[in-house]
Image 1 (cartoon, rainbow, N blue to C red):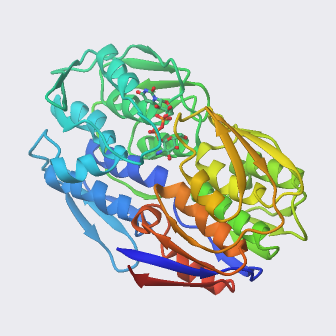
Image 2: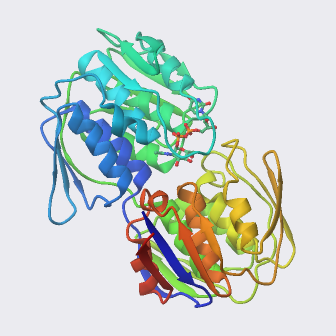
Image 3: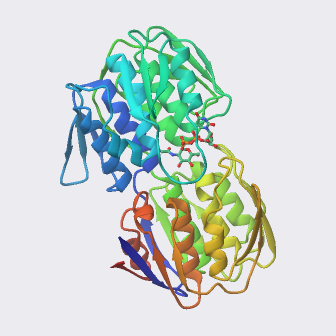
Length: 418
Ligand code: UD1
């Protein structure tokens, strides 16, 4: 396994371009199982999670080709198995997103209960209840989920919570069902909207995209298309905080500022200067931030996937901030590591109280999950002295070549074998 070695203290400067969103690419790869004919995804990010989901669909019989310029071609005409291969499927939770498309295409689907980042128990009850509402019989057998539905029939599906994955899975199953499905209390995340646009580009009939009520009129067939996935708002947000925490000046390109409103609002409240263009955001910062209180919420609220990163930033604030995590119940794994770097954070349940310190210092820390890793990189970039980050594989799940992208903006960062 690799480690990152970071010497902090250099303000980041320059331009950086954001990749296609991991959290839209993964469901869209799953949705390509719904199509007849090839699907071509432009500029797919070379991430471990993308490779893992590709292995899952290859195990089902789909053909996946990586083009020289980042294009990913998926041909799913000959899916021959309804059972996802255990090893890649168990690795990440997003693999579970092939359940909906498999059910719709083959009338059967089986896969291991999902794994993924260790940020909570993350049940799948809402996915299962959604499939059942469309007429599937779902059983949990020896650690596997098995679903059968010779015919899926549209229905009303109310989600107790606007779960991103459940909305996506039910939407994909409903896209080829008989009749109309209405998902109420659906997730409004831009990545869910992007999946809906992709399905419509393939010939689907989805309305209410980007709202709490999605109406999916089932169609007989969907056809493969060429598609460019929306840009990654979490990668953008992470790079924005990297500029702010180092007191730098960075322009983040290929972003949709409309998708980053909560992050921009909170950074501005902390005293960060932000200029928004049509598809770029310039971030600069002088001196220590002001303390800010934040509560994570489903979109358009403050994203839980930015909580660890903003906490690293608030660790250096001039005063005390409170962060409340409402989406996942165990998402403070970065806190003990940040504290080892000199942060003063105490947590109780879902509440973290962050007493800002003048300086963080470099030390050795262990990365436990993807966004915790991003948070520790940010802290190390701002810290005095050198940090070593172990467990970089978690970071590689969601950030492409993070060290070279930061180094291009002046960071003193390198990767070494552990
Ligand atoms: C997706 C994102 C992840 C992000 C999260 C919330 C992908 C690949 N991952 O994960 O990066 O942090 O959205 O924005 O897109 N829940 C249930 N029952 C269910 C499903 C979810 O109780 O059946 C709960 C979860 O335990 C969690 C909350 O709902 O507490 C949100 O989960 P969900 O929106 O489903 O997240 P994911 O789709 O797993």
